[in-house]
Image 1 (spheres, rainbow, N blue to C red):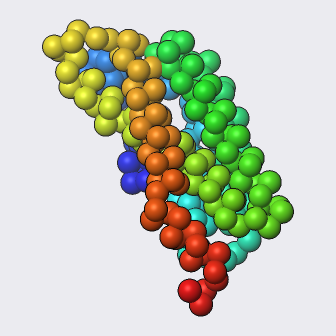
Image 2 (tube, rainbow, N blue to C red; image 1 turned 90 degrees about the vertical axis):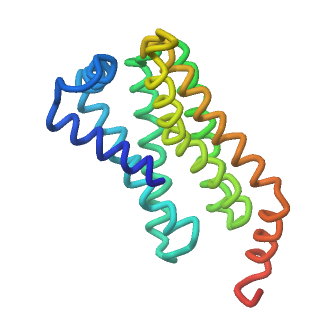
Length: 201
C-alpha cells in the first residue's frame, strides 16, 4: 500500500512539474504518461483514494456504510479507466494483455464482492474483496520488478518497451497467486471462523 501511494504521488508531481533530468528510459516513460495526463489522473487519483480506504473497510476501522460504497465506486472507476490507459501501453501488447486480463479479473472480483454485500453474505464479500484489493495492489508489486529491469538494463540491453509488459505480468501474477494462497491458508480459515462467530469470539 505504501508503494502504491508513493507511486501515485510521484506521478502527480511528475505531471505537474515535468522534468527532463534522469535516465533517458525514465524520461521517455514520463513523457508517455504526460501525453494523456487527464486520463492518467482520472485513473491514479481514484486508485489513491481506493488504497487509502482499504484498511478502513477491510479491517473494519470504521463501520460507516458510505465508506464501503465509496470503495466499490472508486474500484469501478479505476477498472474502467485502466482499459483506457491500456491504449497507451508502453510495453505494447504484452503489457496490454496483462492489463486486460488482470483488470477484468479485478472488476469481476469487485462485482462479486458487491453482489455478496447486497445479499448480506459478509464472509463471501470479504473473500472476493480481498481478491480485488490484492489484484489492484499488483501495480505496486510491478514497481520493484521494473526497478530490477531498469537497474540491469546496461547488462541486458533491454529497452523499456521490451520489459514493461513483462514486469506487469510478473507483478500482478505475484499478487494474484499470493492472495489465493492466503485465502486457502489455515490462518485465513481461522480468521473467517472468528468473524462468522461474531464479536464475542
